[in-house]
Amino acid sequence: MDYWALIVATFYLIGGGLAVNILFNRTKPFYKCFIGSTIIALSTHVVWLYQNIFLLNGQNLPMLNVVSLIGFLIALLTAIMGKRLNTGVLLPVIYGFNIINFIAVAYFPSHFITHLEIHPAIGSHIILALLAYAILSIASLFALQLAYINYRLKNHKRPLAMTNMPPLMTLEKSLFQFIFIGFILLSCTLITGFIFLEDMFAQGKAHKAILSIIAWIIYAILLWGHYTKGWRGQLIVYITIVASSFLTLAYFGSRFVREIILS
Image: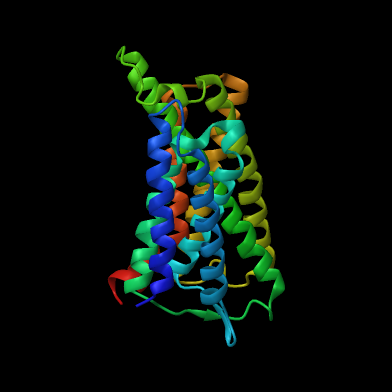
């Protein structure tokens, strides 16, 4: 059993609990404790990633390790942007996801050794892919938050923790900023994939490229529709979630079946 993973999960649990408390309490009595637990959670997360990915015989990148790396990027970016974009409402969800992943890692350790130092170009492709997925995942969380606030307001109900919710216009603007940045990174991911991966459309791998391209097209349509046709509201939420679903299937669909279900 990976006890260090459980320690990281514990700090995320503390941070998530304090984040929930802050959402429903204007005075924020435990804000400093929340900041401290977040810093410790992210720091221990980095240590875990270093110990479990960078091994002497190569880089260990099974699906759960990759998910943990993406979870760290999402938690880090959300924490950094927290004050400007008021992302506190997203933190319990993000921290909860990391807790579940670390529990899975602790009880179901796995190995998939690769050697990115031999192929640095492929390494750059993977880094771009991870950043693109992390940024677009945050955009999906913003879309769900936007849908929730819209639903509560249309039904004449005050959103829970309304005092800590960002204004709708700010939230929508942030959503498209993240989609645009993620779209650029995803474009670079596909370009580097076409250039550096000789077997990108090989049997057993073609579905990853096809699903990623479909996601890219959907994001492109969404950006076009918003900036030229003024698409807003529930429509952009639905399109964002559909695109994110295709991208998730592209990144993790076959690996989930192979490493988790069939292992």
